[in-house]
Amino acid sequence: MSGCSGGVSSQPAAGMQQMDLTKLSLQQLAQLKQHVFQELTILQDSLQTLKIAQTKFVDSGECVEKITPDTKGKEILVPLTGSIYVPGFIADTENVIIDIGTGYYIQKDVVGAKDYFKRKVEFVTEHMEKIQSMGIEKTKIKDAICEVIEEKTSQSAKVNT
Image (cartoon, rainbow, N blue to C red; front, side, top):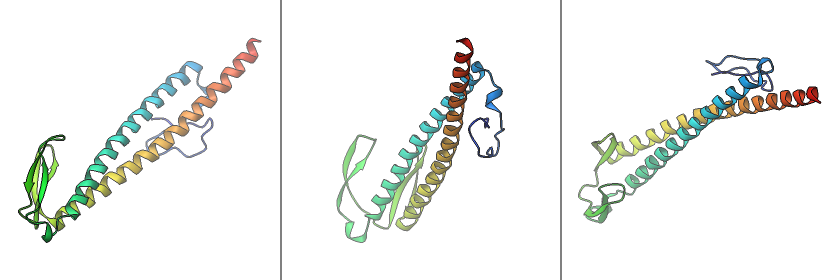
């Protein structure tokens, strides 16, 4: 990863080195720009994946919230897959079986399940915030690179005329 000083005034983040973009050739700047675009795409994809996970955890937590002693015996649709549901009845309002990932399920009491989904939402949200801040820094770098490319291109055009 690389920071820049040609247009970005912030200190480099941990693990980043500062570089004077004005000393790079147009070809090097183009390569660096391409690399930063790829990193931004990866960050955007990661953010989208985390947003989907966050939504699933929020939805699951909301479903657990709806389980009360009054719901015992009520009919529900039980998901077998993402698109196949079968009718069922709520037999136990004190315990639920939750999917913890990679095909593993555990039984938890309703309070424990609520806490589990709350912690998962907080965990995913924290990671989303980190990725968003990384994206902001990468965007600043990309903008600085584009600015230097534009300056060098206009200087080159002035010299050639």
